Amino acid sequence: MRPVIIAHDKFSLPSGHTSAAFLFITFMIIQAGPIWSLGYIWATGVGAARIGLGVHFPSDICAGALLGICVAITTSAAFS
Image 1 (spheres, helix red, strand yellow):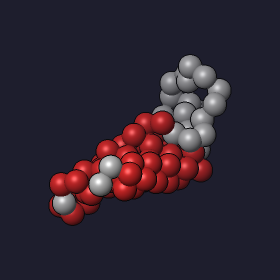
Image 2 (tube, one colour; image 1 turned 90 degrees about the horizontal axis):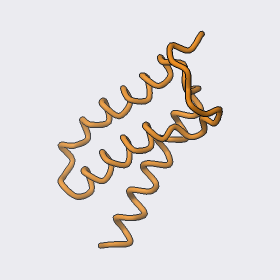
Image 3 (cartoon, rainbow, N blue to C red; image 1 turned 30 degrees about the vertical axis):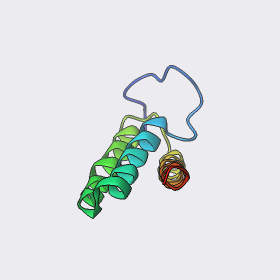
Image 4 (cartoon, rainbow, N blue to C red; image 1 turned 120 degrees about the horizontal axis):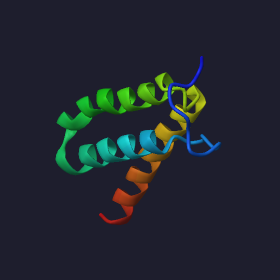
């Protein structure tokens, strides 16, 4: 695949956009309820878009998703 856009840096692990998306959705599930679980579809789409643009590898997306989920769970546990 050739990149559609030119990334401003050469580091891609983990995907920050995917981390933020999964952190937001996981935090909303913890705080507002399980109806927000549908947001994982959107968060997955964010990751897929990053791959489609050619700025991330699938491993970057998986690492970003895992990081976002872990940070949301950890911070929620620390403040509850």
